[in-house]
Length: 215
Image 1 (tube, rainbow, N blue to C red):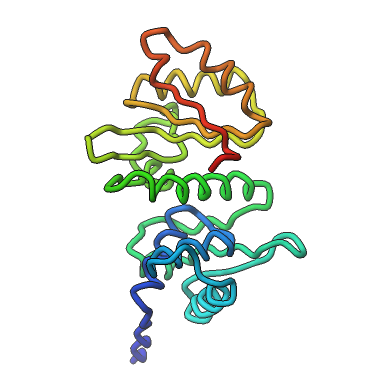
Image 2 (image 1 turned 30 degrees about the horizontal axis):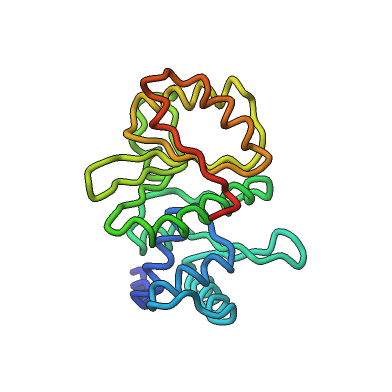
């Protein structure tokens, strides 16, 4: 007869922080400091506190933390057990080094937007992808559902990409959302503006572009 598995007991703060990490795919330690700080009603917690939390999660099998580049901040992401404990249905996606700048930027935008949109709900890309009807339907980096009932698509542009690809996605999104907020880095700024020029005049006001560096 199999022995019963021990019950994992974690703090509510741990679950809330782990849920945030799981929703965003992964999170670097410095951003986790802000997440945990806000859960405590502060601006951020110290690096030692955040590192202790990730170490605790790892010992419990809830998360993995890893330093991808020497002397840079480590990243943390949830395991299958961690995702389930946090109430998330996703499969584990281990971040790749090339994806970190974009993940970090999307997290940064969420941390910027959340305290400025009281009552709004952030729906992350991972959640949106579970509801995709067809492969051709573009998925934004997130949606913001505000208290007025508006649904805003969020796109975070870090690096240059195909002009045709960006234009095609923008035109598809502007037909479906009440507004699209682009947060563009200096490297992507011109390309995003060029794509916005292709939006039909009656929809052009729905596209708003903000400097990523200001978040």
